[in-house]
Length: 191
Image (tube, rainbow, N blue to C red; front, top):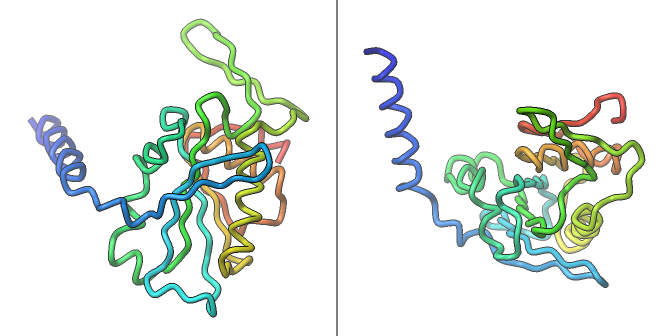
């Protein structure tokens, strides 16, 4: 009986959180373009943003299910947290949710079928993917266009975005103060 009660509580909480989802239009729609590289992204600036003040930067990389070019899907997981008033007031930051194209991935990873499991093959010295190159270029552009505290730059992601987090940190050492890969994989010896 206790298990059923817990499950019903979880289901109600998830349902209510979807009904009470924040207005994600606060994340401005932008498209980064540089040469042959293009990437949609959403950006949330702190309340009362001032170019006279340096802010932390948070990059969040979505999973494979949110790839595309609609500039919407990347906000499905995690964006609502940054829209909460108590978070915006106590932790002002520039928050960016880029969107990986459908035909690319954040990291250079192959996949092999292994019975019931999918096995990832991390490329030792693989070239960066289209999405990784665009992401690195987007980061440089964000640093030029906004006043960012370079000692407080953070990156994180979910699943494929977790893998991309590891990849971005490996390719850009000493850039981020911290990283939070969620359900992403990598070979730690290569970091």
